[in-house]
Length: 417
View 1 (tube, helix red, strand yellow):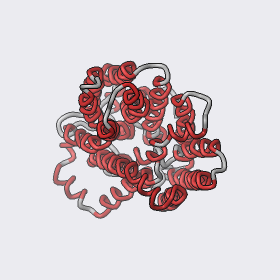
View 2: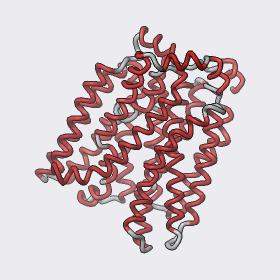
View 3: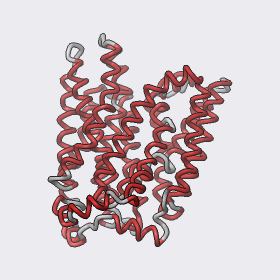
View 4: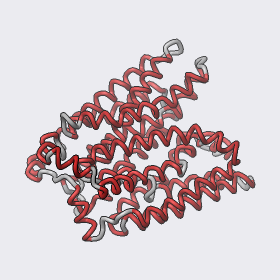
């Protein structure tokens, strides 16, 4: 194992890409209410400021696929970091009359969001030692949750222009340190594999099946309503009359997922993906169902708050972090970049869809009906994953996946530290 291996230091640098993800998606939650309270902003502009990043993120996922044809992973990470810093900088120009600049900046940040959400899990999976892929894969989700917590806490004490600087900091640090991380899959490596062999491999039923199974994990994740919960978090905290600031309360709730992600990182390579996924599905189902019943019967707002915390805890065991690294780990190495891009695209399309469908779904089925539906998907998804996914803990499956993974140049590793 070893807590001081070089790959762990490289993983921390790559993990800074995940901070882009967390900062960008959490930014509107505290900032938009502030702007609407001091400026006369139309509802349409407010919705655009909030939602446009999810739409442009779908295009951002394919920025990586395009760039990977010409440069390696760390060059792409550097480009994303610089582009993200520039996009955050545009938000300094926002004003009541120039609110459209903020919408454009959010759209550009959405491109970075999509690119970051596919690059980080991919690069982490490739840099990870074969026996610790689950542990390293969890770094992506840990970075996302930690950055959301930082943004929530900072928003209680600082104005938006300070939050812009907060968003720029990890980009600046990564742009300086990424050069110490070895390359894992450059265009030269890709060419050596042979284009004809790659095309033939993709057309094989085995490869198509692996793609379908790997990408199905993100579908289950998004249909368990993580974004529907988060977008209603502020109103829930108000209803519960929590005697602390919303940002701090939101950070406490998100800490539930962070705790379970750390636990998952330590356990997934020992217990295996299948057990962790099943446990996550069962407990996610239970918390969503109890939450729905509580809202229907109006037991106590505090119960709803606890259920959301426990939901984040259950979600973080596997359904939250695992889909991000399953796709690049399970597919052949020649298609790992494409798998990561498709994974992110499916995520953002479903994220956008579930947020907008949540209201009409509640109107049609009631809040209890909606959450029973989400709970059912979590349970069925947990059972499905138990039978469909492979464990990397067995010798046979470890060898299968090792065959798919790119080999990091060990001589290059020695040259960096």
